[in-house]
Amino acid sequence: MTLAEKILAAHCSRDKVSPGELINVRADLVMSNDITAPIAIREFRRLGVKRVFDPSKVVMIPDHFVPAKDIESAEQAKLIRDFAREQGIVYFEVGAMGIEHVLLPEKGLVLPGEVVVAADSHTCTYGALGAFATGMGSTDIACAMATGDIWMRVPPTIKFVYHGRLQPWVGGKDLILYTIGQIGVDGARYAAMEFVGEAIDALPIEGRFTMANMAIEAGAKAGLFRVDRKTRTYLKGRTSRPYTAYVPDRDAQYLAVHEYDVSSLEPQVAAPHLPSNVAPVSQVKGVEIDQAVIGSCTNGRLEDLRVAAQVLRGRQVHPRVRCVVIPGSQEVYLRALREGIIEALVWAGAVVSTPTCGPCLGGHMGVLAMGERAVSTTNRNFVGRMGSPKSEVYLAGPAVAAASAVLGRIASPEEIS
Image (cartoon, rainbow, N blue to C red):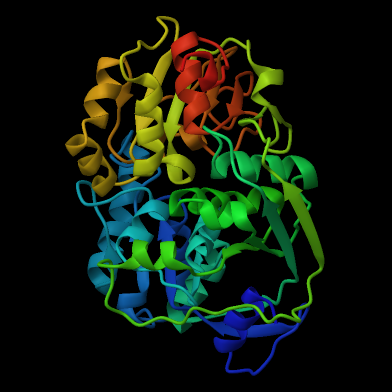
């Protein structure tokens, strides 16, 4: 069996599962946010169930429009806040919160070998820790909150092998953008993506989170990494719970295997309006921008802010550009403060926000006007994703976003280093 199949088999008390089978799976964690939880709560009430299956395994995080940007978002947040208090579930509020897919791993709430489901498509982020994590609709999450079970079809697995040593300024964001550019936004449709190879072994855990996060942008059900020393180092001190690190069998059957030599890979940029519209930065540089966004569940971790500060330190954001930096959690914010990263970013002319999804989904803290163009470390660049349907979003890693903020146009960090 593949890594995904082993985890699923263990969670439905089976010795073996195969792609295409319909199974009931026990969930280790069920999560929703301030956009999706209100629907899940409504459907939970309709089931007639009084209590969630296990309060310690149900999590709600208001992170998309919180701190509340208007009355409607405040009402949404209040609804889930009241439900969380009623049920005694795990809940994170302003001042102790963060972007859900950054926060949950930090808090040790997701471990290798677990099954995590959430009413958010980027739940696949947790595959970086060797978990099977996937997004589901709010009605599915309502049932999971009530029963602790989910119903699903076992996905086939596609293996992605990355050979070589990455160039400076190239990271997980560039690898996943390149991959999506190669296979398309439906290239891994309802499959589990399994990432391996020497370039992956050398990749920091933050880069793995980024790659797993954007598996959904290739249409995948999940994106998974094997557990290694870097995984265990990340988990150390975050949890005392035991976990199982599964390993795929040598004779595991894959739907396909894609191999890439990434030794000469440049930083990648996805132009509007698809994450698959990818080109090396050298082919895109020169496009003028109005805004640069560094953050989100894709690239809002400490290592991402370090890279941005490395580029911005001692330089100034272009007078025509708004540079918005959003730490992924309070922990990231505090550590960035202690390291002098926040000070470097502010001196460069960036604005630093409290942890929130903010502009990624066109929510707040950087919505684009008609005709405006942004380079962003977020995960989607669909029409109207960050504001006006007549605006444009270019996706890139933090190094390219920071260099672009300085030069006022899409640029490689090599141009100013």
